[in-house]
Length: 242
Length: 242
Image (cartoon, rainbow over all chains, first blue to last red; front, side, top):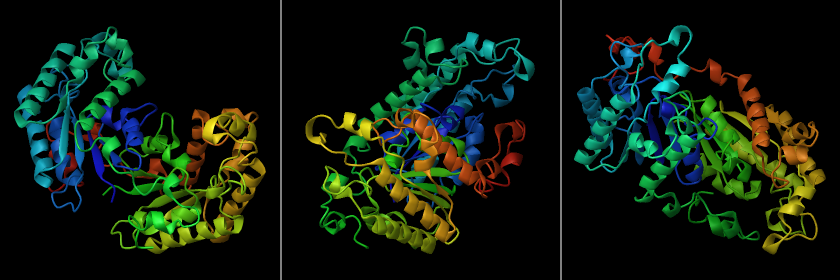
């Protein structure tokens, strides 16, 4: 069994295998080393994510994932009294839900590498353009960058409390001039360049651990190591059953 | 457990999660429905692939994959007496090796959907440009389109004998004017547009089966089906353990 790395999150995770997506890029980086499993659920907040824990991460799994990214908050941070309010989760509950998710994962596998990712920043102008017409039309912003930042802060604080690595995407993206259009396609979801940032930040965290792709063994010998006249030799160790 | 679809093949499979790759595109199509597992091994031919069968597809797997693409031949078709001759596998042996791969998969799971994919065409001029210098420099072509076509023919014939779906990529790509540069980056591997063709052809086969992505159930309720006031209700069926 190849090690599994699970990407658990909302639409930004669910869409991570689209053209240029950060999940697909990770899968390429870990080719022949680990399977990258997409467990993204568009529109989900941490409150609804709790219902999925036993379904996605059964405590009696014989081979639990070696790592997981937890990437929620963009929906939790939707504002009360606005068009997306049913997705809203209060700030303190968001932090506690994240804690329960982590506790569950660590209960199933104490050695699992758990990486927390904050929600990205919100470009309010971009959201308005996106939601100008039809059912989704907004009169007032349904997410603000300031509020998303509060959720990001709780996420990073929790990682600190628990000694887990975290990626402050909210801050990181805003370091770049023009982040609003450069990284976000509709004020919330990622452009190709936004995906690159997430990919780079996630790899940076993995590279500091034993799950650094370059340090992990490749599944079965590289073809250049196979003796054309005597291929058995190269496979004896890893594939002895033949 | 989410159903698994395995992509088994050589470098054209191993690289299928690169930017715009057909594997990543499949993973996106099957988001929340099936996991797409990359089991591509660059440089491998069918002779070496046989050594991997018990390793990748153990006969006692509790939940074998629901489907697999078998995509070999580009290396088997390397010419004897040329720079890539160690990868060469004779035509008849290629067909027999494919048959053994299929027999193994069907033994592990008789219901598994097995899809055969022929090698792509070879653009000899593109191969020369790619291999003009250094260690890889060629004096004579190490692969020809004609020979690749013979392997493609065997692959399609075998699928016919066994009643399995197949994709004749060798023929399909050559239907398009300028296929040499449009679909192949170095005379052998796929460009972005080449990846699109493979993706479309694979989806076309799946769409004729019960594994059509649009007909498969999504993992857990869509967020719009969750009652914000009473989320338990939406999860009762699929996630009863909470």
